[in-house]
Length: 426
Image 1 (cartoon, rainbow, N blue to C red):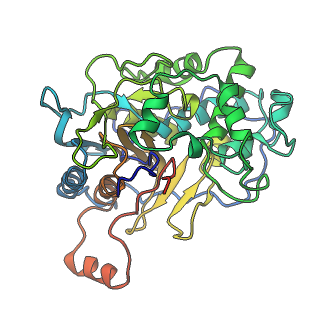
Image 2 (tube, rainbow, N blue to C red; image 1 turned 45 degrees about the horizontal axis):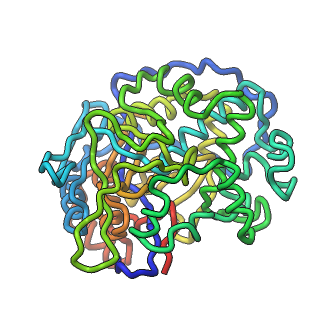
Image 3 (cartoon, helix red, strand yellow; image 1 turned 60 degrees about the vertical axis):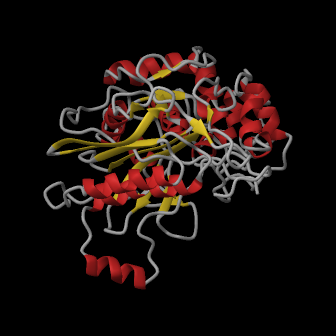
């Protein structure tokens, strides 16, 4: 990725996924929704059974981590869970100043993987009949949006047409970051920034990724529950699942305990990397300000896919997806991505990018296999693309040389190209 003064923070993801063996498929404790709308698209088929799933190619995972480093990340890591246990790989450093090696126990900022946390909380409110997916947002937040046609479902599927205010917020990489590093925004300020921009589409017509959608989701959660969104994460997800390294500390700038430090590449060639670890992430809040660690992300995604957090009908709605681009390999449901890999495996989760960190958190639909991956930079798209190779390696296993050559001859990429949670300014 070329670093020019006209670049904006590109935010994408590191592969992460779900944990496995120790999480039992307990039934949800939440009531079924009153009258969920019939899905417009059929839900995804389950991933191949564990007995037929290929063994993860951990050499391939390690190669992807090293490739992320070769493309600008000081370090990278991945944690895979499956029927045979936990497998981890690390590369490089989590702290350039001390030289401390990357560590899968360390905490980091997960960026837009936070959107899945927010979606789960809101969908639990749907299960509790406190929110209706197809009700206008303005029913719950009167006068907030200029169009009564925008529904709760439109927010969760990025089909509201609300502009992504971050398009204008990050005029440059490092200067753009420094302008918001310590700022504290209100939800209303972020919504106002979005509404000042032209809407991108009519409600429900097309997918257009926007952080504004999940800022409004946070507002909905707080309005309906009467409690801060961080308290609802804790009460509904963090404590029930025993997530020891997951927190929402907005607007505190610190990452407590063992942590991975994040780094940005400056606009000036040859200038030193900028440590971006301490920041409010107030520009994102319920769209991207959660802190976590690989084991917790594994646990979260596995529990979600196994039905521990939502009713069966609401989980089916969440995993019912529509395409996000022309590749027919990437889809979006309700705060949840689905990637279709070259081997036919389908994995559900989310990508995340926040200044200094790329993250992926994905699981098979049955929750039996999961991957969490992270690289500690966020404005080097090539590093993100390389990190994406952990998905193919972990869920598809080793590829015979002949098959790899055949795919290359057909023009099929060996890994999914990087998908940014925040688009680049060119």
